[in-house]
Image (cartoon, rainbow, N blue to C red):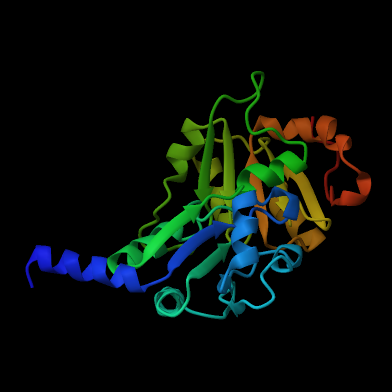
Length: 279
């Protein structure tokens, strides 16, 4: 079939298919979800959601909608990625509004770009509804501004979800250490010793402040504050686990000043293992 014929088939298929919306659920606090995302959940025919979407947001879903858990967590996959994509294509064939609900923002380490690419190839109409990403929201709720005129004029967002010791790392940690005043690491808890080793090998000081923020923006939010030289031991002592965002840089020093502006009941501070406070 020539190119024109292929395009005509795709257009004809679109007329018979529903639409898939890649919706960002935000970081957890239901108040941070967009109005457009909420409206789509309320009228959706099918919602395919990820593991980190909060129960409060799932409660907004149209009671008549079909719900499908496609969540991925370390050691547990409800659906493989190709199965999730195929499921979206199939559901769009029978339903008008299919919502793919993803934690944070679909295009920030959420595989939204890959999913949209496959949907477009299949001739399915698709739209992105951005969400507040946890890499911005979690530090904000912890009283850590990612930029500040006295501390940081640059921010790098990077995934820490790489296998330690893999043959060819995709993240150039040395370039990141040299090129950014604030580093925000997603999904980095499991590889934290490797990541810190890479950063210190690039001459980032062991005294550099670091904050780990777990379950950011939720009532159970927890924070662990330390330095690159102390944080691995602190994680072991505290039993600190994923999901968490890591913030590295001098902006972390503002946590002790700004975090008191929110109710103490909102979070637990797990400052453990430091002989003296980080100045």
